[in-house]
Amino acid sequence: MAIDVHQHLWTPEFIEALRARSAPPRLDGWTLYLDGEPPYEVNPADHGPRDTTGLELALVSLSSPLGIELLPPEESWPLIDAYHEGALGLGEPFGAWAATCHADPDPGRLARDLDRGFAGLQIPATAVPDDRLLTVLTDRDLPLFIHPGPAAPPHPGGPVQPQPGGTPPWWPAVVPYVQQMHAVWHYFHAVVRPRHPTLRVCFALLAGLAPLHAERLIARGGGGRGRVDPGFFVETSSYGPRAIDAIVRELGVDVVVNGSDAPYATAPDPGLGAAAAHAIRVTNPRRLLARKETRT
Image (cartoon, rainbow, N blue to C red; front, side, top):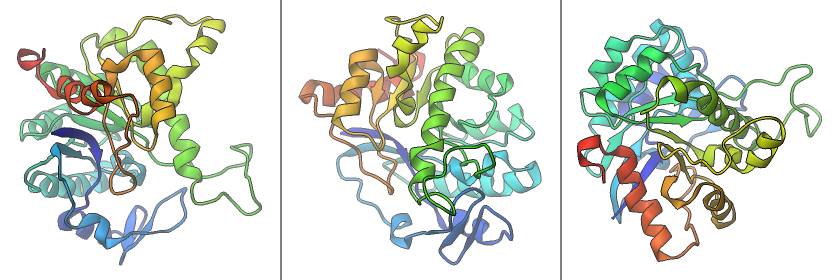
């Protein structure tokens, strides 16, 4: 039975909270409006009953590109609370990552939320991680999941526009999201790890393939090639055998975990044989999620 550390499932409570808003992020019927992205037609079936055959656990998370965690507290918390209530009521095999407001971090509120049974905390890659929130996690021996945040709107002097009048619909997922994950991978190694040496972290979408740039890091004065942090995991969503194979060659198989980003993608076949598939789908996710007394 496999574990999927990265799914999204909007419950009725969360959908109602999005529809109650008059400014992005908001849902008008089934049309989603976000800053920095074109209107998106949500498929209602994506957030209905889901096939979880073969899954021991499927962890759902707040959709960080919506920008909810970065809103002012009076706007952020009603949406987060609606997400929490719905996610905790999904039933097996679902579990959930907690979310929190980063505009005004509240460690006490995060502690109370985590103690309700969440697997750990998810934060957007665009948030500056607050040491007090990370300490709440380490005190409970719970992991952190880093997901792409909102796509920045185009601006003069910003990313190249590949067509007149804007960017194609796939642009946010392929350019800003990947850039964010690349940046946060290096930030956590250089800045966060020295302050939180025991924190377990999982980076979405193979950390934007940042680990593959180790040779350039060395050439520019960085260090660490050949030293793998066993507490920094990467999950596989939206990639396939070629990218997974390259990451395994750089980091080894022990820090790669299975993630699908359902309903937007499906969990990839690593293409590395049965032993590697079992490690990525079962053994490694268990080690990411298990507390110290149960980790092996």
